[in-house]
Length: 234
Image (cartoon, rainbow, N blue to C red; front, side, top):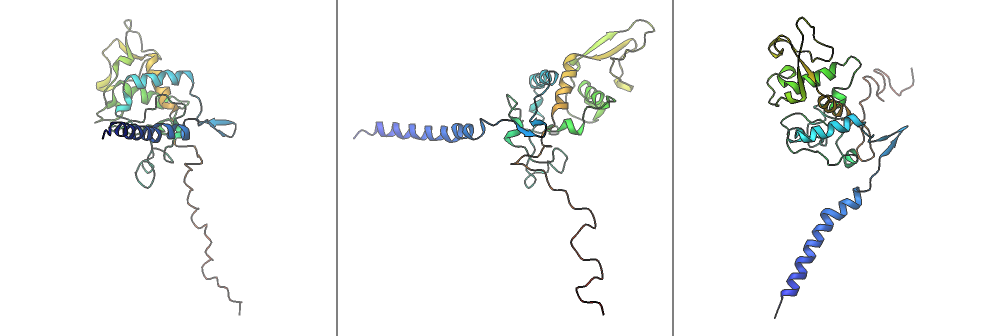
C-alpha cells in the first residue's frame, strides 16, 4: 500500500501548524498594536529626525552585538535592581522600531533606558560624556573592552597660536591630541548620542507591565501606636 500521500499530508500539516503557532498567532496578537495614550502624549513616542538618523548609525556599527535593549522580569533577572529600567520590557516598547535590536549578549550594559540614566541636560555634561565614550571608552570607563570609534570624529588643524574652538571635544592627559590639533565630533556622532538620549523605555507604566509600587514611608503603617489598647481607660 502506498502511504506517500498520507506522509506528505502529515508533513504539510505539521509545517502549517508550526507556521501558524510561531508566525501567524504572534502577528494576530501583537502585530496590530498601536501607541497608547499617556496624558497629552502617546507611548512609545515618535523619535525626532536626528535620533532616527542615530539609530541607523547604531545599527550600522553593530552596537546591538554587545548591548541589549531588553529589561528582564524582576523575579528572573537582576536588571531592575541594576537600574536598567523600572519594569520589564514588553512588545509595546518596540512598536516604532524596525528592525528591533534586542541584542543577544551583554558585553556592555543594557541600553533600554540609557536616556534616563544619562539624560540630555542643559549643561551638556552627558552629551560630552557620550562623545568622549565613543571617541575612546577608556576616558570615561577605564578598563572597558568597548572599541573606540575615532572615525565618528574629525581631526582639525589649528593655525599657529589659535585656541581650540567651541566645537572641539574636551580631551586631556594621554588622550589629548597633538599640539595644533583638535578633535571635533562629526554629525554622525551627535546623531548617535541623540539616539541614546531617546532610549527611555521601561520607565512608563503599561497595563501588561505596571511600575512597582513604592514602599510606604517609614512609620506610615496601620499598626496602633505603642502602648495603645482597645480597653477602656480605668
